Image 1 (cartoon, rainbow, N blue to C red):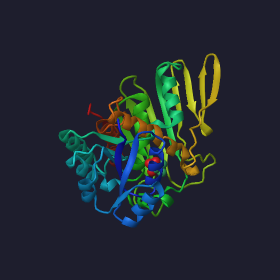
Image 2: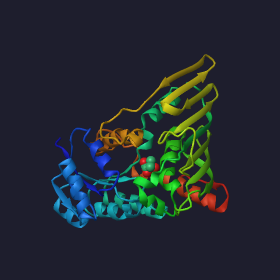
Image 3: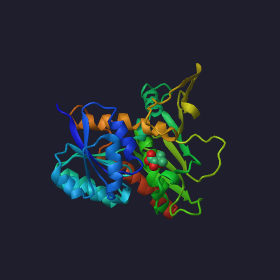
Image 4: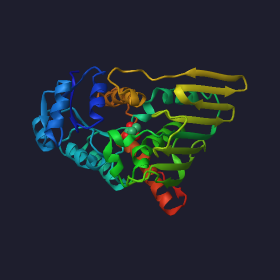
Amino acid sequence: MGNLRFAVIGAGFWSRFQLAAWRELEGVECVAVYNRTRARADVLAREFGVARVYDDAEELFAAEELDFVDVITDVETHPKFVHLAAQHRVPVICQKPMAPSLTEAERMVRDCREAGVPLFIHENWRWQHPIRWLKQLLAENCIGTPFRARIDMISGFPVFANQPFLAELERFILTDLGSHILDVARFLFGEAVSVYCQTNRIHPAIKGEDVATVLMRMGGQGTTVLCEMAYAGTPLERERFPETFIFVEGEKGSLELGPDYWMRVTTQEGTHAKRHPPPRYAWADPAYDLVQASIVPCNANLVGALRGEGNAETTGEDNLQTMRLVFASYDSAARDEVVRMSAG
Ligand code: 89V
């Protein structure tokens, strides 16, 4: 099979890393970059040797022969570009969070399904190396049935410096980070049957909430999962952005993913500790490298599915479940009530 030809839609902060991650894989070739402000697309195209640049997305779809597009724009424009790709029958990979509302996310999935166009969501957090290890340990049943887990991503990192639009979101941490963390909860423990959430806003100069606490009861094994998230900008003794800490209690022991990628498995035999650092890429921003390294296996999974070599984990349909959790969390916080999740 020849190279899969794709276009990047959006030339903002993440596009550079997304393109660098695509270069780690064989058989894919970026042939065009679109950006509303053409000069930004020019810079990115020059840096990555991409042949053509557009500031009109319609024109790009009309002119290019594409095997897929990679939508790397702000969340507000995801629906617009996904619908455009569906109209032109071009498979689409869209960044997380899928859409600004559940209704729009559902429409994106429906339109792509009706057009017969694959829709994948670029949900990379679950592809972080230590999180894959933790999943493997759970699958090996080394701590027995998990009855409770805590998933924490609490950081004082100034996320608004590189992504200023995040400060403008009416709904911030649950969409930006919650979409990752709640997806990890689903990945590790299955679908939620109920959700309770509380939020706070600590930063005075941002629009949305920057702290969220979500408590879920999962179906399947009935695990209780607590997700704690914060971008409150407070000084923390244990500042490890962007590491996620996970603690799981099972009937036969416990598992802990702690700072610096240390995984500790404790059973009656004692504690076994091993470090699971992510692979390092020269192109990654050192402040984000755990996250950026996870783009590579995420892209590999999605493009493998496009080639018919396996199933994508984070299809639009699958990610709708994560979106349902994000918006159920907002509903729960607004009403201060438990929200029961339907089968979907
Ligand atoms: O990966 C992301 O989605 C980023 C960040 C880690 C900063 O929340 O927006």
